[in-house]
Image 1 (cartoon, rainbow, N blue to C red):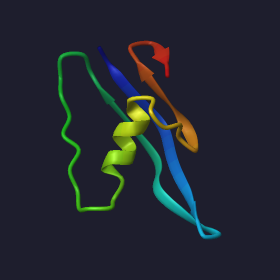
Image 2 (cartoon, helix red, strand yellow):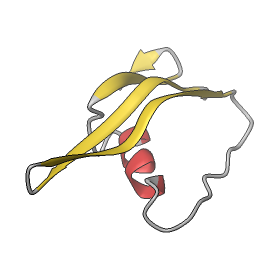
Image 3 (cartoon, rainbow, N blue to C red):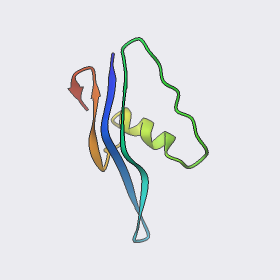
Image 4 (tube, rainbow, N blue to C red):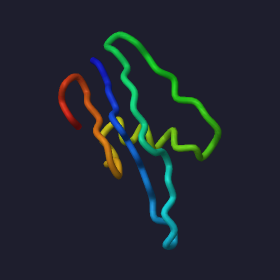
Length: 70
């Protein structure tokens, strides 16, 4: 199934400071293809996967699995 992210942003509040994890992230992974999420520790890889898996809600933006918004 196709996975699509549109304008995803994620922020946390850390002791009164707003921390941007990722901002305005958009991509599409067509059905039958794969995507690797790589990067240094602490850059938001796990947070992105939680948002894509509907375990966390993004601060803004939309995630679609097939044509259904999660």
